[in-house]
Each structure stands twice: as C-alpha cells, then as structure tokens.
Image (cartoon, rainbow, N blue to C red; front, side, top):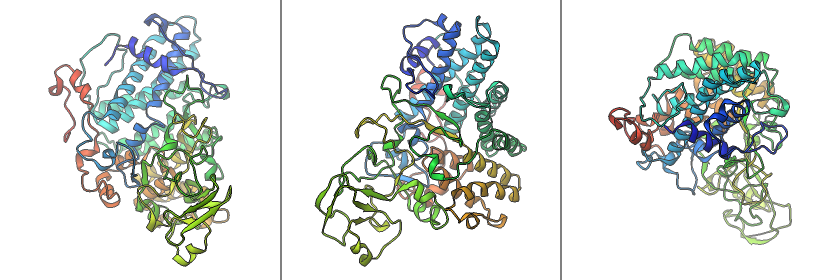
Length: 549
C-alpha cells in the first residue's frame, strides 16, 4: 500500500472542479503536504478525493467487464481485447490490468477515508455538524469499497486507520471481520448524513444511500460464509425505510429513468458525478460505447453522437432477448432499454448489407434505415419494408440489439470517449427488488409479491398494469432473477447478483455459450493482483492467491 501523502496527491490532482451547478463541487489541488489535511479546506478536498475513486468503478470498462461480462445476460461482441473476461480463459490471470486498477484505486480511496476519519476530530475552525457529516461520508465510501472488494476477492486486507508511511505488512482478513466493519461504518454513518443532497451539492452520500447500501450488504451477507439468521430481517428494515421515508418515488415511465438530461430525478438515491470539463472529468463515464452494435457502416448511416460510438463489446445472450424480455406486449422495458430503429444520417443509394430480401436501398435524411423487430419476420414481410430488417436469425457478434440506457449525445463530437453523464449507481427500483429478495428469503412470499408488483406496474405499458401483476404462486426465485435482469440490465449488477445467489457457474453454463466451456467454481472469486502479492511482506505465503489462479 502506498503512503497517504502520495495517494492524496494523485487523487486530488485528477479530481478537478465540477462545471455543473448542481453537482458536488471539486477543485484541482496539487503540490500539497500532509499538513494541508489538518485544515477545514484540506478535509473538504480529501472528501472530494475519496468520492473520485468511485469513478474507477462506475461507468468504466473495468467496472463493466467485471460485472457484465461472464454472466447469463451478456457475452462478448466482436471487438476489444478483454474477451477473456467473458470466456474465463487462462488469460484471465493475476496480471489482469482491470483487477489491479480496481484494487489500487479502492485502497487509495480507503486510505483517504481513513485519514479523514482519523484527523477530522482534531481539525480546528470546522463546524462540529460538518465534521460529523464528513466523517459519515468517509465511512460510507470506505464501506462501499470494502463491500465490493470482499465480493470480488473474498478475504482482503482490512485497514481502518490511516497509513502514513509505506508498509508491506498486510494480511487477508476473514470475511466475517470485513462484513462487521462494513456494517459498523454504515450504522455509524446513517445518523450523521443528510436526508437528501443539497441541490447545489448533488452527489454526496445521504442517509438513504447508506441505508440502501446497508440493506444490500445484509442481503449479500445472508448467502455468504458469514451469514446470520437475521440478515434478511435487518435488510428488510433498512430497505423499507428507504422506500417509505426517503421521499423518492418510482418514475411513472421506465424510459424516463435513463433519459438523457434527466440524470437528477426522483428515483435516484445516489449517483457518481461526471462533468463535461476535460480538466475535471477524469477518464469520463464511458459506458455509452460498450453496448452498441455496428450501425455506423450500414447503408444510410454514419457514426454520430446521437447513436453513439459503437465499441461492440457486449452482446446480449439469446436467453436475455428471448426469455428475460419475452413479454413485450405488457412490459415496456424491452422497448425502453434497447434501440430498435435507426434513421438515415447519410442519404444516398446503397447495396444492402445483411438483409437478404433486398439488393439496394435509397434513403433520404431521416428515413428509417434499420429496424430490429425483435422477432422473426417472414421474408415476404421483410421485402415489403423500404429499409433493412435485422431479425434475430441475422444477429452476429457485430449486429444485435444495442442497449440505449447509457447513450450520451451530449459529447462534444462523435469520437469522444470520455462521456459526461452521471452514473446512476443506486435507484429506488433496485431497493424494491432487494426488499422483495429479503422478504422471499424469510418466506414472506405474499409481501415479496406485493413489493415486486410495484416495479412491474411501473414497467407496464399504459393500461397493462393489471396484466403485469403476479400472484404469490407465480413468485419463484427464477422469476426474481429475471425481474432483476429486466429492470437492471447493463447497470453493473449481474455478476455480483449471480455471485450472491451462488449460481454463477450454473447460469453461465446454461446461457452463455462463449463462457460455458471454461468457467469453473473458482471463478466465483477474482484473482488477487500479482503486484499486491509481490509487495506483501512474506509474499504469497503470507498473502495467498485465490485458488485456481
């Protein structure tokens, strides 16, 4: 682990100043010494630095590769050098760059939080209420990081005090102690956090963000080696409080949740802040590029900011398209989650590329060029359409339904990789689904059904609310898994869900043909970065690698 001084310098240097009025304000700080942290301004900047480490996970390729790839919902598209993270080949080893970067950035963030928690009580000239709030925010961030680390890696090094000098003394702390520390941090944080972020300081952790996270911690702990008999009951208490008392609500239209420009809305519990300034945006929210098909070389089309820059990384599995989103008559979420129509932005006459029912096509500006009906259409019907029809039998690793949730038409040009949209890390629909899971885990099937029906009614097409409701007899765990997929697809949850449920290997073998041949039980944990083992006192004998790597 690096010393605090070098870590805080690195973090504050890239953190930057927000260009948005309604966002957590940040300043570029450099060339500081450790004494700066003993001042009110130093504490404020350190808290911003701790928040910035969230950007190493949310909206990045590494965060998506570790949660989207290698699941039942997504397999790999045609491009990119990280396909092995989907297929679980031996390239996924201890030198994996994404794993190393997450490990290093989260520990930098943890040590920044440790410094805040240790030092704030002695800072003079700072209001006591503000002191308590900043410590609570640091506890929230620290708990968040350890929660992800323990899910990804199992036992990790638990450090709860500031590291001021370089050290090689690290150990793999038992999971039970890590969960205890996470729970204690969140329980201590909740009373001192604001109910909601101020409009001019949006993005800070709130009481209800901490309660949502704590509820998820208990739901996860309930199926872990540290499980206790009351985990689900405790989760229910916290998740209910978020739903009943936060003042948040499910938006009436599912499509509005992820609508561009609507990132601050009444369903969002907490989001990770990005900006439009190249100085302050770090690497940006890049999720907009990864879920898109190769539309930009098709007749009548050229890449633009509205349709996105297609990296062709993540391709939905047949299970996702044909089973999870089978009901499109009553449920709006397929239509609201995937792009099915492309309009000409390059007029002209072209030869058809994938539609075998036509040879040439002519498009004016704004004409439909590609339509994905989502079902097989007869050749006779396809031939009547004055555009190319992409039916499921024609899907390839380049052509498939694109997830539209993360599109970012606000980028400065069609090549910009560093997106500026906030990443919606916690939202109320997930709270409902976690609550339903906690209730189901206690055998409260009727309560779980009522809870999940809130999410389903919102997802209904107008007038189809009754058809979307299920009965307790229809509530199965399989149904819950599919409901989480319908609601949260592409939101960095699935691998962690399957890990929590203990069926990652089974589900991948059933539904992800590219990953099925290689996945094994040891893949329930990620490899400890080799550089961490190399710098540990005693090496691997003292800080052992996870089995199988």
